[in-house]
Image 1 (cartoon, rainbow, N blue to C red):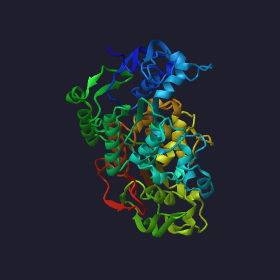
Image 2 (spheres, one colour; image 1 turned 90 degrees about the horizontal axis):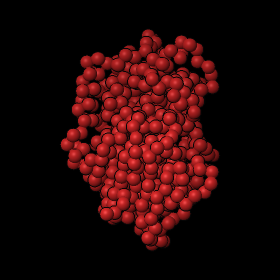
Image 3 (tube, one colour; image 1 turned 180 degrees about the horizontal axis):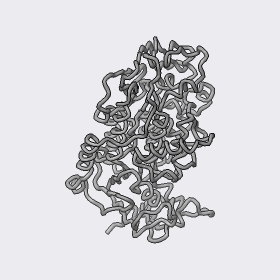
Image 4 (cartoon, rainbow, N blue to C red; image 1 turned 90 degrees about the vertical axis):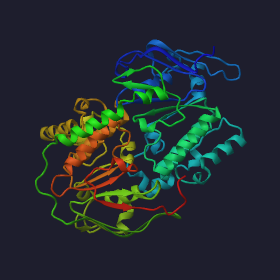
Length: 511
């Protein structure tokens, strides 16, 4: 009888702040491909970090059996944990065989040197490394490397700056980087976030091809049953820090509770909307919130936007759509005063032409904003309530002391998004979905005249998606509120959206 490739037995992390509520059992057998599913904060990342040996175990064991070239090994999590001061064969053994793509990797390398607006800053953009420089060493033979890069369509990306890659390009790049190391197991968190329908379909096909090849086994961490592809053979469900038993894919879907829970929540929120903190009574006194004329943006020889005209009037609710790489984030960066190229364009915001003497803070004080780029940049070790409070001052981090009244307001918005109990928790210790809810609260604390939500439901589970959408719709009922909403999932659009702006790509398609 063969031994499991990876096995956790009665495992519990030593760190009380990172513990599941009950000891976990997990096994990955030869030929299996597994989905870990659970609501935000259910413990999926903690389980993965125990599988990787990144967390010391207070009890139980983690064991590996990759059987590479006759080699077989079993290592305790203490020996494989990266905090071990002395080198050990176990940590090398695990890192050689398992690769992990995290939530933040969807937006590029999650290094501490990245900062918000870097993507739009010409000098920093030009100094950013090329994708080819970030691939790293390969554990494959040269012909296998070329075949993999060709399969993933990486060739055209190698001469691009890493921070200019779209989310779809970054997903492919990160997968290629990990697979070039020839791992036995590939773990991907939130594999489909930020991908348009075409890119999502092709990534699913790519992962299915990799699964069928038998060269790598795949573990996906997801928050929705919709994100469990057909090639997945088994499912582990996590809820409130408890890892359930292994189920076959068919067994899971036969008993799947998420869809029923989501329908009930949607009905409840329609009958009784979430309670929101009070806002200002007087909307901004201008009819045209945004006016863009013949907007053209180029980076080197690459055209991102060409001849874009767009007028947004007070009270209108728009969705901004387009394939990955069509320029949506670039267009929003012009409206949010984050892109220096705005000064060379015909742009008027809140009744004033850009460059007529207004500061970026004059613009930002009217805008509530959340985006993938902001989430990636926010690596602050601050309490969640301070992250929300930073929205009052339009800062990444909190550098001014909020008044008691302002803190009460921020606490009210955390409550509205169902995360009031996380107010004193360090932001970087929250799950990615919990972080996104905090950043959503940050976008609302000013009671903004213009709400710009770029993929706001990224990484949220089915329950938090319904709550966030209910908050957005209820907020938009306030007089004069204007909104731009970006999503690749039409079914996630708030009911209040009545206008559409669609962008087209000006270079080769993403996949």
